[in-house]
Length: 172
Image 1 (tube, helix red, strand yellow):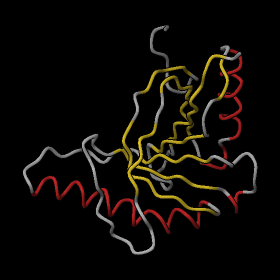
Image 2 (cartoon, one colour; image 1 turned 30 degrees about the vertical axis):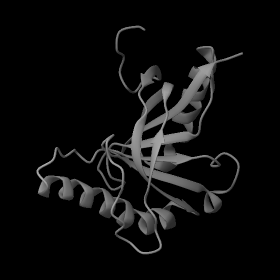
Image 3 (cartoon, one colour; image 1 turned 135 degrees about the vertical axis):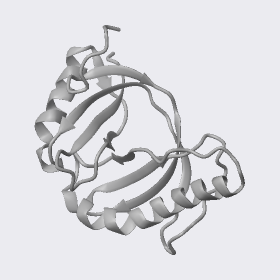
Image 4 (cartoon, one colour; image 1 turned 90 degrees about the vertical axis):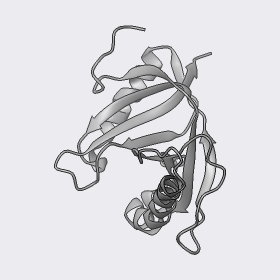
């Protein structure tokens, strides 16, 4: 691979599999996120503090990730949301903090991914997504997974930063 480029340039990188705490929902993001976040963050922070209380190694709660398997197929009000936070590999169970919202453990597989840093609001992502998709095609790859976003800032940050990512494979 070439020397590391700016994250604002599309790039192909290798990513290891990651164990995740995951919640799922359906609907418009501004409705779904507020419904699911208390359960997800409550579960992950409780896990972190339980480990600390037991004197075990703890972890940094890092960037929220979301996968949108049908965002390109249905209107925003019908999107499927798979929202997750990375957790330690040795995690075998998660505390459930919110009734009616199950937080599950899954392993998200990556391997070869194409990604780009989007700077700006979520409703301005389309040109960045198009640029990444064109880069994937121009590089001899094809998309082999869901549209994924990793949120590096909160939605109300002065400068919103989001990594847009796809698992890719060499085109046939």
